[in-house]
Image (cartoon, rainbow, N blue to C red; front, side, top):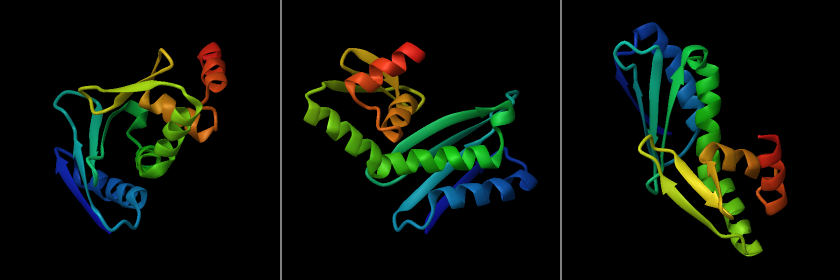
Length: 146
């Protein structure tokens, strides 16, 4: 497992718990993964950015109660697992169904997907993919309850 964590302004006691959650989230992978953890000045938040193989990049700001190693570990794990294939499979299924989509990378590292003229954040697309609802009907139902 090749996980390298870069710390910026994170206290040592927090580092140990967070390092374990990050290491567990990445899991036993052969490729090198770099995780950058930063606490911006005067902000009650942690900025976490993951860089992995095949130009994988994911970033998120964890604020307030979200600054919990369990929450962060789960978020990282889902982002990595979805990038490793589940999201690709779901997007391929959209193509098979003839549903058009485009992607647009945001400055914060996330991706916006426009699927059949509906703009969804990457988190929403991953959630729909996990639920098996990344279809026209699934998206329609999601939009009604959004």
